[in-house]
Image (cartoon, rainbow, N blue to C red; front, side, top):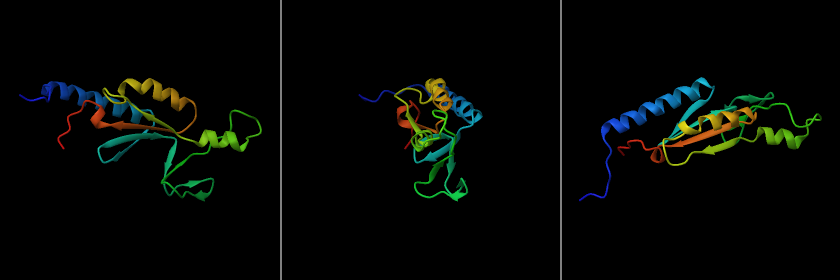
Length: 130
């Protein structure tokens, strides 16, 4: 007797279709998809390493954010500039990945801060053969 519960193939086909829909929705909203091992993450408002930021080449972690004006105060203080420049990292819960959270992720984007949305396949009810 096996302790492993197996779902029918049609279940996994539907889940993969939903992941495709999510992928298309996020790309059409301006996100960029990145893959790292079994994880996929989507970024918006973050420039890849090597691009320039204010005329200065980026260095460091590999990701830099686009500078935006300070909306909080009129003087453009450094604290507000740094807060606007700090990305928001979103991690989904157990279920079907980022799909049910897309409206919330779009609200995060509306704040004007860069967004990184990480998707873990092993938490997303997907068929993993490895």
